Length: 133
Image 1 (cartoon, one colour):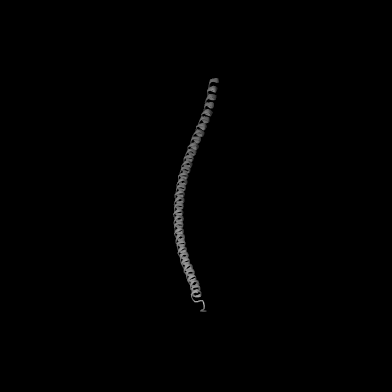
Image 2 (tube, rainbow, N blue to C red; image 1 turned 90 degrees about the vertical axis):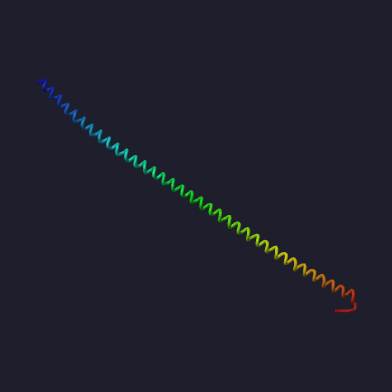
């Protein structure tokens, strides 16, 4: 009877151990399943981060290109405006020089006329001292 009791006891304990091992196997499978899900989520997050990084890099490159284009356009526009301003200023300076020459010519004409008038009056007084105007 001791042997059958011992065998029954061993079988009971083996049954308990089998249940425990099966429970552990179930837990291990659950852990593996959770790990696989976590790996999938991690890969999905890595993909999202990679896509976001690529998208951001593309946007930055587009902004850089757009900014460089705008700067180039502004530079060209500014250079054109400066060239137009120089041309306008040179034209105005040329016009002012022409006006000054005209004024100089008028002044010299007036001075020559005044000199001739004074010379004429002086000649009249010298040549015809008795004749009064």
